[in-house]
Length: 336
Ligand code: PEP
Ligand code: MN
Image 1: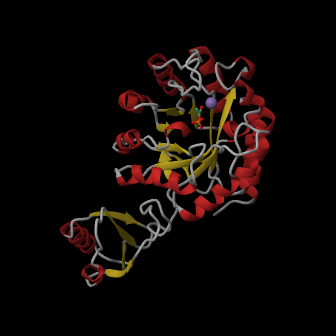
Image 2: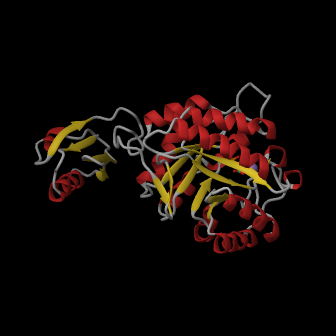
């Protein structure tokens, strides 16, 4: 249920609606928009008595939301959410880039990569200190030492750090080191982790599970918003299909669909979709053409010696070409 306020409704009227919702035993979530505020009603176990809300001063209309997700829907908030990370927007009018190695590696290598990102005007560095690996024998990440290296990268280069939080126990330490917390595909439905991250003050990049429907993905995001974190970026990273010519199948249609169903920004990860370096650029461009707000790309100064996911990792020159191409495209088709 959504209570849409009149244009110019006062803060007192909005608060009176929120109070009435609480008195009915539900939870109000005010969603301020550019023009008007909508107050979303969640937690209803029985029917909501819409008339009790419809007649309150300042209320324009009361709408039933038929979808299982509410706070992430465009019905609740028609304006697109812009997640701003220390002055750098994701979901604004310009395409944004996040790039870096799959895993945090030595400080030397991270500095070499960071230097190239800064030269390309890429403000976000990605790299995992905690890695979700299919094999228990594979490199699991530098863990705490990796977080310390990320701190030094931020300090020296001023880059914003995007890094994965793998478990509930490490939320606090990863939150301290990250500017954006990544929740990986394998954890998209780790509801205990989602609830804990929902209470963090840092933005979250929520990857789509490899076998998740769009609705399941949006419900996972709903956990974050309903738990109090509105700074959520969705990430399409490819799904598992019958096709095996790429590591995963980049679901380009999901990008367009989610942009219409939800106000949250959507970025694409063509690296984990492609699995092979030569297909990262075409898939990245396809994602941007479909409406993605940005790209997260694995890149390295020496991709063939990367500690994980080298086969899909671009060299820094390849990254630069892709970024230039996408920026030209973006300038030509800017979504103002
Ligand atoms: C990653 O970004 O390195 C990663 C592990 O991604 P995903 O969760 O999409 O597999
Ligand atoms: Mn990876």
